[in-house]
Amino acid sequence: MLGVLIAMPGEIVTLIFWYIYPPIPAFCKMKVFFNIFTVSGEAFCLFLIAVDRYRKIRAPHGWQISRRLAFALCVLIIVAAGIFSLPVPFLWGIRSFNDNTTNVTVTVCEKDERHVNTEEHHLDISVTMASILTVLTASIALYIPITYTILSSESNDSVTMKKMTRQKQTEPHDVISIPSIQVSEHMDIEDTAFHDKETKSNTSDMPTSIKIQKKRFENTYYF
Image (cartoon, rainbow, N blue to C red; front, side, top):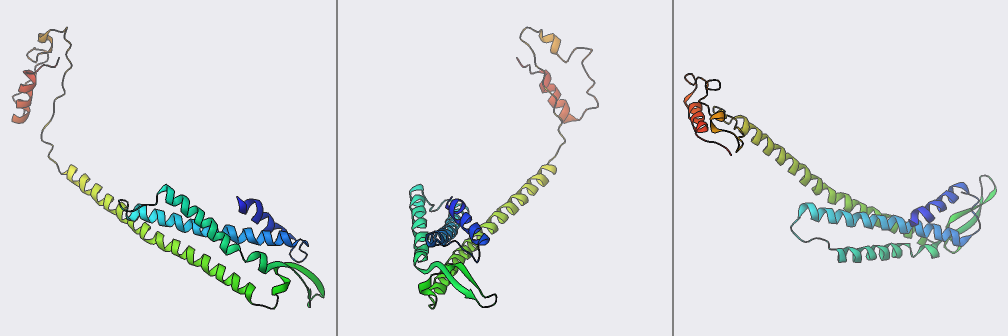
């Protein structure tokens, strides 16, 4: 939300007025502060999500991040992002200088006038960028074993399904089942008996297993 409402509009102003930045030092400092705050906060948040997913997938029955701990870690992320952005009001600001190529005086939002001849500004940028890249690299590293675990699980499931399908296909199918007949309690038993001349079939040519099943079916009635 801060990135959308403050950081992005500030970057748009910077791109439009790159060499003729508005002479408002507070706006310049605020834009850079929230820019670093949102980027570092997002990096820490992605790392926390990666840790949570790692524990959920690699150790689902082990220690997990609880709601209370998650809330505390979110607060810690905000504090850490604020610490990373803390040097901005002191090192960043509006600076005007004469461009020797075009012989034009330009105004930019970068180093503060007090730190033009020092290395503190470059040191702050280097430390911030290195920290953010380290956190993002650690997040990507956590997703490597997560991906391996998911792919291994899917492979094992596929092998199990193939074995079950092959076993089902090799099962014997020499027994043919005869469907049951629903008989109402108001019907006469003789109506459903297989001894009727019209419904009685010749069993002389049937296999022995089917004859046994047919005989059991004739002696059993379903009410």
